[in-house]
Amino acid sequence: MQFRSLILLGFGVSLAMNISSYAAPPVPAAPEAASAVVQVASKAEQEALKKKKSAANAKAKSKPAATTAKNKTDKAKQAASKADKAKADKEKLAKAKAEKEKLAKAKADKEKLAKAKAEKDKQLAKAKAEKGKQLAAAKAEKEKLAAAAKAEREKKLAAAKVEREKQAAERAKAAEERKIVLAKQAEERKLAREKAAEERRIARDKAAEERRLIAEAKVRAKEEQRLARIRAEQERQAQIAAAAEAARQAEIARLVSMEVVQTGNNGELRSETAAQAAPKPQGLFAGLFGGPVVQKQAMLPETRALDAALEQRASKKPFRVKPEYEPKVVQYSGYAPGTIVIDTAAHYLYLMEGSNRARRYAIAVGKDGLQYKGVVKVGDKQEWPRWIPTKDMQAREPAKYAQYADGMPGGGMNPLGARAIYLYENGRDTHLRIHGTIAPETIGTNSSNGCFRMINEHVMDLYRRVPVGTAVVVL
Image 1 (cartoon, rainbow, N blue to C red):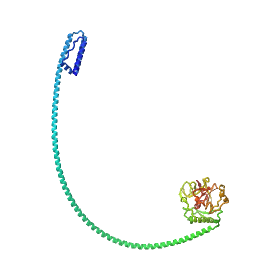
Image 2: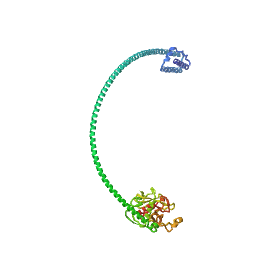
Image 3: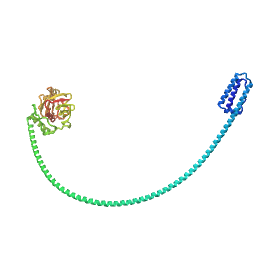
């Protein structure tokens, strides 16, 4: 392919030269040797040839009158030059061919050496494999012999171990038998010592028990003497108490027989008070109220007679107040000690006894629309007070209250009960009272005409604790 390209290239150049000279003869066909020279010509030679042809063309153009003979001479020179060049190229090609054949021979020799080496490696690998096989067989045999020898040694060692263990077991058995014998002997000695000690202890315990029984007999004798004295004292105290109770009952009977119990109280009873601690309460009301009583009252005979009648009735038909309505000391604060605080919503009256403590009583309060809220003071106190319904009460319910327009004597049927604490505002009577009741079942309700009802026993306790002038806060 390159050969044809070079021929066409040379033909093109010659044609261009002939066209430029207008008189140049046609270029003869190049021989096979020239084609070979052209095929192996270097790029530098082609460039030189082109320059030479260009110079010839330029010269031909500058001398249009040159003759055809000169052109032929030039072409002949060119042909001779090409022939020389072709010869040189042919020699060069022959040299290249020889070099190529030399390389081919070297390659063949190399391949032959490689093949010989591969064969040698194959033989070596085969010999190595055979040797490895022989070594493995020898190693297996050696290991088999070693395993047999090891098994034999282990068998001998196991037999020796069994023998040693047998001997050790025999020695241990003998030692255990000796130990058991020694332990048995020690146990017998211990039992003998313990038996002797137990006998001595029993003897000591027996002697101690005899001494204890003697001492207990003495103590029992003394205790019997003490109990006899206590029983005698109790019998004497019982006789004294029976005599006192008989005297008290006689006094109650005497007081109940007074005319004021039969007709009621039409006067104003205000017992005098003494600023001293009161004695422990006696009779039916003893134990109803906890804590000390602030004032001891020297009760008027009329008051004592009506109180005795109340106690007598209560003993025949007692009223059981609910546990939550019992007087109780509770935590309460916000008011000065001695102040009465009435919580109408909760139905409780509090008598402050300290900065954060108060005695609490249950109360009944006014019906809806008849309740008072404000601050008042205790303006008066009366025992078994005479009751006169207010004009507002008489106007609201004349059928019920008009018959008492002139008043009802104080006594067992009086709605004000055993005591009344009168509440004043700016020195005037508000007609509000903290008083007892003949309807204790209404406590805890809104059922009064504005007053604050209390169970008779509770208002009697409060009456003893509250002096005239006490502040009362109604919430």
